[in-house]
Image (cartoon, rainbow, N blue to C red; front, side):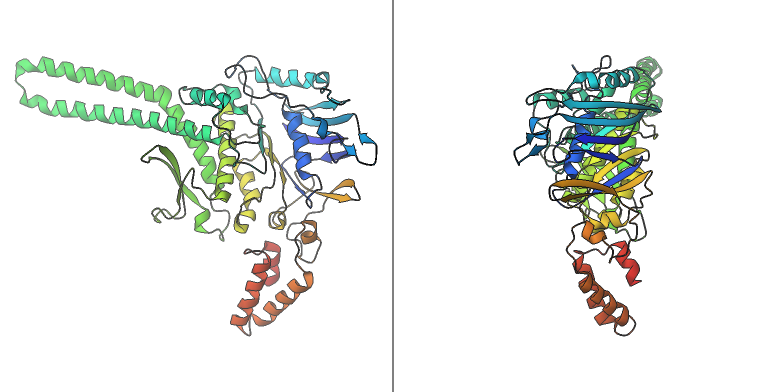
Length: 486
């Protein structure tokens, strides 16, 4: 499934705006108050009916999702006396199952409901597709600006879900849509599932290992027994061999599936945190994920850095730095949902919305984070908002598969523009101004000219100007500035 376009009429700050998205990745930029989060909200709401309450392969009664309507405050309000601008109308155009599909969310009065007849036809097509056992299901993911700090834990729905995924070998497919549109994280549930399957794998492995040792021990003692004791000893050996055979059959029929599940999710995570270029610091590289027990409970531990760095870069699931935590939660959530929906296939398809991607990220991660998502989940469609010029400077936009949409507000009027490719754009263009970064071109020019003049004459003084440039960008110089310095 690919989202082609959304038309917003009287939705929040938008009175009549059309947005067309890249089939691969769209980055939405603009200063605060230009409608970035409102656009993501409109997209998210319009997807909530998809697989929200399908018949068949159910999770308890459903997968926890409900169709999210349009609130009264979602309607455009004009303060000069016109009031609410009814009706609110949002039209969605997608490509689904290689065919064009459209629907609308429409609300025509205060305290009214959206007209379900305008999306029912699309809902039936999604449900029909869902009920085909061999069909591939599109992934849906939403990660707001409070994700993952706001967690979905402790309520009855999540507790019931956790009981299912920590006691069941097979999870219903539509569990892959469990609370996908919530603004809170359910990754703690996926962590519980991971610890459960690791315990099952370890238990089977240890059982087989112990049985083999017991059989070998009895066989080695056989020569010390008198002939009339052979029958008793052989009976014990046969009993152990039968148990060993059953354990191996269980491992072959069941545990391998656990291993496949664990391997798929962790391989996606480790691919995301693998080296993107030669400049990546070691502490960005994830090389191992383990389960360890503390005095009170079990935790997953994530090891960053070099393999011989001991515990220097080891964090448990609760102590991860904020930047790592947000990315690990997003990647883990996407990977687990995809595996539950479609197994280990890497033919990824679906829509992922991420608000303020740069939150808590060190500039070195901002430079590569979009590339990391695209290489880890090729085929997914990402729609991302950001304030960061560092993220934007390394993004190649071809206006087809990849786009940059700039949002603007001028005297209460909201507009949008698809920008030309900004990849490696010169610093004295409008890139920094577009992103709302207050850096004086004149000051930056002065520092760059001084550095270029001094780098071969006085390396110490040149380094001081280099540090001044780096300080302007809060520690990490964007690639398009680095090109000017080389």
